[in-house]
Amino acid sequence: MAKRDKLIERMRTNPRNVRPDDLDSVLRTAGFTSRQKGSSHKVYTDGVHALSVPQRHPHLKPEYVEQALDLLDEAAPDRDGDDKEEA
Image (tube, rainbow, N blue to C red; front, side):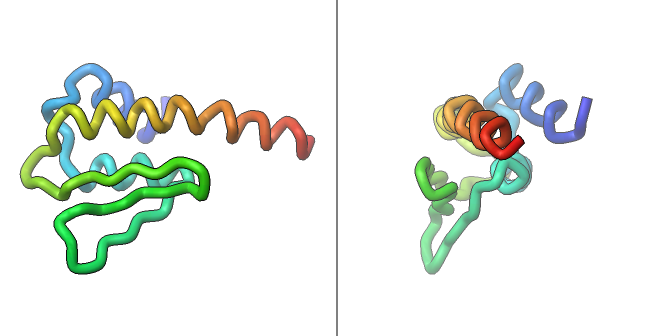
């Protein structure tokens, strides 16, 4: 199991114990880009999906982690479909 998969599984198991850097790593690996200009929120986007997450330390609120996981689940079939069309 890849490091990213282990981290996602840990987030699903305990969404209350997720650091902003962990969520950032997972979303960037999944192809999302982030922007944060003079704000307390980071906005992640992949061109179709978008998510705004307040950068709260040391841990994020579980609602934002669950939204990010839902977004990853929603975006994953799109990416699988893109790979199959190219093959």
